[in-house]
Amino acid sequence: MNLSPLISNVHFPPISEVKRWLAERPDDGQELIDLCQAVPDYAPAPELMEHLSRLLSDPLMSKYSPDEGLLEVREAICGYYGRKYGTQLSSANICLTIGASQAFWLAIVTLCRAGDEIVVQAPYYFDHPMALDILGICGVYAPFVEADGGMPDPVTIEGLITDRTRAILVVSPSNPTGAITLPETVRELFEIARRHNIALIVDETYNEFIPGGVRPHDLFSDPAWGDHFVHIASFGKTYALTGYRAGLLAASEEFIHHALKAQDTMAVCQPRITQHAVKFGIENFDQWVAANREMMSRRHDLFRSEFTQPSNQFQLAASGAFFAWVRHPFSGCSGRQIAKRLVDEAAILCLPGEVFGPGLEGYLRLAFGNIQEDAIPEAVRRFREMA
Image 1 (spheres, rainbow, N blue to C red):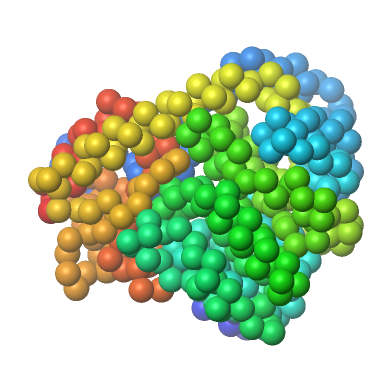
Image 2 (cartoon, rainbow, N blue to C red):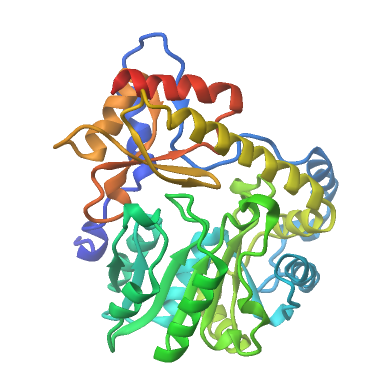
C-alpha cells in the first residue's frame, strides 16, 4: 500500500531520534546528563497521588466523560483562570484534551483547510509544524533574531500575513528558547489578528513557570477575546503529570462547539482520572506550584551564571522557564552532528537546533527542567571541555 506523502515527508519525532543514539553511546563510565526532554524531575504531590488512589475503585473512573470534560472540572478550571488571568471564563469556553498537542490539533483543524497558511514564530515547538505538514497546511516562519532573544516582532509577523493566512502562532514561554513574550507584545499580536480577521493562537504550556507568577497577558479581559484568540495550555508540567496528558483548549463558545466535532472523532474525552487530578491540583496546590516555580527559577539562574562564564565557547542565545537556546561553536557542523558528539564525547543528551526551524543548524536546545541544581556545574563543565 502507499503511504501519504504528507506524512512520509515529515521528520521522525526528534526526541525519539536522539534517544536512539544512546544505544550507540560508548561506555566511558560517565553518567548521562539528560537535557533532552522537558519534563519535571520531581514527582506529583504525594497528597495528589493519595487522592487518585482512592478514586480508582470508583467504577465511574473507567467510563467516558462528556467530550469537553466534566462540568465540575471545567468550573474549577474557570476559578483557576480567575486567579491566574484575572478573568472568569465560562465552562463553555473550555475543552479538556489529551495534552496540549491534541489541543493544538483541535485548534488547527477547526480553523484551517489544506492549503491555508499559519504564521509561526521560529524557533518553533517541533510538533507544531509536523502537524501542519501532515494536514497540508503551510507554515510561514517569522525568523529568529538572536539579538532580540527570540522575541516575536509584531511588524515582521504582520508583514507575513496574506489572504491565505488563518492564524498567528506563538509559544510563550517559548519552547525551545524559554523566552517569555511580553504582555504588551501579546496584546499587539492580538490587535494584528483582529485587524486581519484571523486568530492568534498562544500555546502557554509553561505559563506557571514565569518568574514571580506574573500574569502572562490580559487578553481574557477583552469582552471580545474569543473572536480572535485561541488559548492552549497544559497542567502536565504544572502538577508533574506529563503522562496523564492534561491539556486544555480555551476559545469562544462557537469555536469549542465546532472543535468538539473533531474531539469526538479524535479522542472522545480526556480520561476521567486526569480530570480529577487537575481539579484536585487546582483546588489544593497553588503554594506547591509556586515553590516549584521558584526552584526552576533558581536552576535557570544558576545555569545561566555557569554557562556564561568566559571560558565557555558555547554561547547562550536565549533562556528562561525550562529551556536554554545555545549557539554551538563548530563552524560548518549541523546541530544534529554536535548533539550526537555531545552524547558520545560528553554524555550529554540534547536536541539539535534544526528541528526547531529552518536555518537553525547552529543551535542546540537544552531542557534543564529535569536536571537538579547540584548537577548543573558538571553539565556546564562538559560543554566547556568539549568546546
